[in-house]
Length: 192
Length: 144
Image (cartoon, rainbow over all chains, first blue to last red; front, side, top):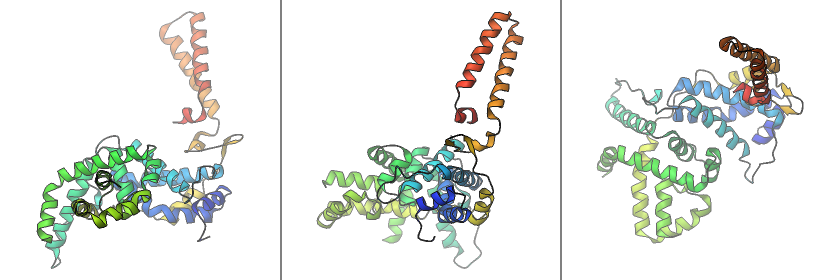
């Protein structure tokens, strides 16, 4: 079962195979949590979204069909990320006010605590900047940069064309460059 | 791959060739190898990529995959109507959803008649409209 594709696991789960479903959940759990966390900016929202997305997966399994499969077998992940994204959008119809919980930084008592806290400060700034993006720009950025999804797959998740995806990404990155301009300069100075 | 297209691609996908559109990657790498302007564009984009990579991923959830899968798999994969499986949590109201819709129609009709103190003829029309409206809803529309 380790070599089974997602589509194989979905068909097995559709027949009531709990082991196949568990394997499917294990395969996508961490990325689903990271995606929902980055898009919503909230761990508690991410928890609810991940639970709901996998519940929908379980309930969808009996009707799962491979009719839309493309070479590369990305059908399940495309469908699943679309479910996740729609749940994120339903939950967060407004810009996120605070960066994700993971970015909380506390003064580190360790000898290199200053450097680590400084690094945490940059991460917090970046997450806060991402949180200011419109939700579809944020989703496009998370899918392509953090999830490493191809332009075609990300466009399918967002249900837009690849040109529109590029437009979202260009606007997202342009906004982030402006917001984080001082950090980029600092980083260059330190590297230089 | 033109310089303009290369710049557009970098503006959208950043400096990492792994993030570039697969169909254009080879041509873009070719341009990168022979163009100093292309290398400068990549260097500029790498600054933002570096910052993005320093943003921490969300911390873990309070439950793990195995626990979640076991809990969900205990849920029956019921069917709502023949030949059509449930999706998107429709199972929650799969028991007697039609009865729920009927009760809602009766409640709406009762409210209209009671609140407007209309004569019987209009009340019957309103009741019929209410029933028509609710009976036209699909399963998903009644649930979401």
